[in-house]
Every structure is written in structure tokens, then in C-alpha cells.
Length: 569
Image (cartoon, rainbow, N blue to C red):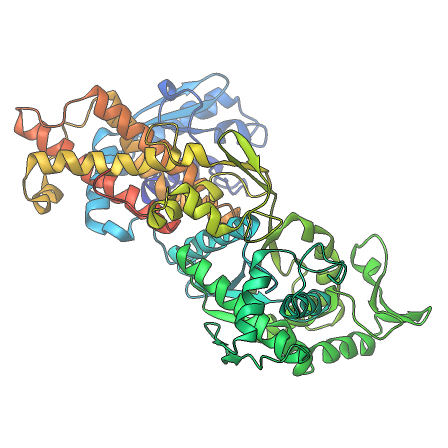
């Protein structure tokens, strides 16, 4: 049922209840739901049971009054086909066939805009995701973040928000120092296993590649930064650091391009220190009286904001703990005008949420209590040839996004990208996920992305057989769409806008993948149950219009999650 139809039915209930509740001071809250059993109707409402006690009335008798008023309302004509009372006072409605069929006309008129809304009214939202340390290639966890974050961004855009996709580079701290010493050791001719190899060094083959290019004096550039030219001097640790960071940022850019993910902005952690943002945040917390000194360290009173214990901000050696720059970074987000901020991160960041939010509250800038929002995802296990894959030669210790895309496409990057994107958002973020490469390569119903894409291709095939002008379908009579499978397909199509609204409110883009699988299932079931290109012209044209509407919604949903909709499979 379309949102407008739902609003119209709610208005019918309000009108029916107006004389009943007059003078009582009650304001009825109309909640419409789908009956668990479709045979009971299309819409269920328990308002009679809600109000019966307050109105000192029998709920079933109250329901009868409401039903009588509904049936007498001329606005119900063409929308409501029948109304029944069930059990102690449930009111079940059947939506008129013409109203159900009208979703096809709506989709054909709105096309790629079907499901889109202006709820956000241009409100700025910043969504930060991936945010990998520039110390190695992107791993599959980063891939899950990329798929979730990009789909969530598109979801917000579809509902009228102005979205900024941001990548935060942790280009400062111990890990960057370790990267530099690892490349330096390689440049000096040492390798993992040698006595001279640093114990904490990164061991992947990519370190040798960086060292070779550094010694060759090459120049590398990241997508948004200044080029870095290697000095070639193995003793020049600062040049090695700058070159290695830029080299890996460029590598990550290439991986993200292969994944079809683009960012609007890149923000460097180092800039927070360089521009004095970290010191300013700490001073603001001190000025607010939310800190104390103990054992030579500076502490933040995070227990005042729900944390289980107070946290160290500045250690006795003068360095800051890792959550402090995060507080400074989110102050900057707020100052940039982002009233809503969402971070897509691994579940290992769970412990930082309370202290970051505590710091933002304590600074006294009017930042809301739940700022920022978090979408935390769990681990991804990769299976290939029936066995778990834990490492790749290039990374040395983990499976990279590039590995996964190449494996899942059998060498076809576009196909691999589709599979990886779909698979990685097809489960709720806070559940662990097993990515089976063998399933991603299958061209059968076992492969969910193939199953959905094939629904689109199947429709294209029928339309090619027909060979007519699709534009004429927008005006055909839809009355012949009365078969049970057609009713189920119509209902699923109508649920798309509401699915997007729910997915956004719950920060759950996985619901779009769930919906697409359901829609594809309804299409395949309909195709197998009913012939489309029948002799009767009215039926044929109505069914073709239904197929074109279904194809449009499949394409809309796939585009939202960054997956292609090929016309042939």
C-alpha cells in the first residue's frame, strides 16, 4: 500500500472517530498494520480496543460504530473495498483492487524517483566510513564499512538529506611510525625473519613495493593531497614516512575506485594537531571544570556522563590517549554545521562511544547527548574452496578488499564489485558474516545478487520478445491484474518507499537488500505462474506494465546500494 493511501485510510478512521470521541478530550492515535494472515485483509487497526476502556464502551460495539461510519464515508469509495470486525474488536480493511493496481501507474510516472522523498529537506548529514589507517591495503572489514557507509549515504540522499561522505585518515601516532620503520628496514635490505627486522614491523609484500619505489625516487599522489617524492635516502625517516603514507593512501584510493565508492572529503588526523584543534578541545574541557589531574595525568570526568569510569586524556609522558583527537574531530564536525553525524566503524570501537560522547557533552557547546550516531559492524569471515581464507600474500596477515573483488568476479571487476557490495550489506551490521566466494561465483538462485539481477534481466527478455513501445504502458488499463501472484507483486512494489523510510530510521541499509530479494522472489514466482505475452491484449498490456514497474523498482533499489542491473545474464 502506498504511503498516500495509508494516510487516506488513517484520515477515514479519524473522520469516523470524530463524533464518537467528541467532548471526551481524547486524541485517537491511528496505527495501521498488515494482518499476519493475508486472508484477513490488507490493513488492520486496533483503535476500538485502545479506546474502549476510556470511552466506557464494549470494544466490539465500538468497532461496529467505527465500521458503519467508514462504510458511509464517500471518501472511502475507490479506496476501501470491504471492512470486517475480527475477534474482540480488530478492524480489518480490504483495499480496492484499483487502488492496489495504481502503484504501477505511480511507478511508471515517477520512474527513478519512486521511493524518493524530501523528508530531510536538505538537512546536512556527515557519514564517516572506512577511515582506514594508511598503513596497509584495505581489508574485508573496510569493505563491509564501505558497502554499509555508501549505501547508508545513498539512503539518506534518497530521502532529501544533503550528505557528505567523509574519510578520516589516522595519519598520526604509533602505527605510522611503525610503517616508516618497516619500509626503512626493507629499504636497507632486511626482510621478515632477519635478525635486524623490527619485531613490530608490517610484514606484507606491499612494504617491499613501497621500499623499492622509495629507493627509485618515485613520486606518488593521493586523490586529495600533495604529491610525495621519495628522497631515496634510507636514513631520511621523515621522507620515508611521508612517501609511505601517500603511497598507501593512493593504493586505498585505487581499491575504493574498484569498489565504486567516492568520498566528498578527506580529513587528516594530523591536521587536528597541526591546527591546534586537539589542544583547544582539551583546554575547553579544562575550562569547563570537567577534568582533574592525578598521578601526573590529566583525566576527564566521563562518569558524569554514564561511563563506567573516568578516562585518562593526557598521559604522564605528555601524549594524548586515542579518544582525545576523536573528541576534537567531532567538535569540528559540529562546528562545520553537521547537526547529524554517523560513524560506520568496526565493533572494536564500541568502547570509545561513551567517552567520545562524554567529551562532546562536557565541552559545553550544546552538542546533543547522542551525538554522533554509530553503526558498528562485526567481523567478516571469508570462505573459498570450502575453507576459511585468513591471509593474502600481499597484505601478509589478512584478506584485502581487492582480493575479494577479484575472487568474487572470477577476474571480472564489475561482477566482483556487485557481488561484494550486495553480500556485505545483506546482513545486519551487528551480526558476523561469512562471505562464501564459491557462492558469489554461482549463476543460480543460491547466489542472492545473481537472483536479484536475473529478475531484472528476465523482465528485459520478456520485453524484448514483445518488441513494443514501453511508453504506451503508462496509460494502459490495469484492471486485469487480479491473479493472486499479481496481487502479491503489487503489494511488494507498494512497500518500497516505506522500506526506505524504515531502513533510514533504523540506520539499516541491509533492509534494502532484504527487500530486493523478496521482490525478485515475487517476480520469479509470478513469471513461473502466469504467462505475460498472452493473446488477450488487455491482459497482456497490463502484465507488461506490471513488469516494467517491477524492473524500475529493482533498478532503483540496486542503484541505491551501488549494484548494477544488467539487461542480460
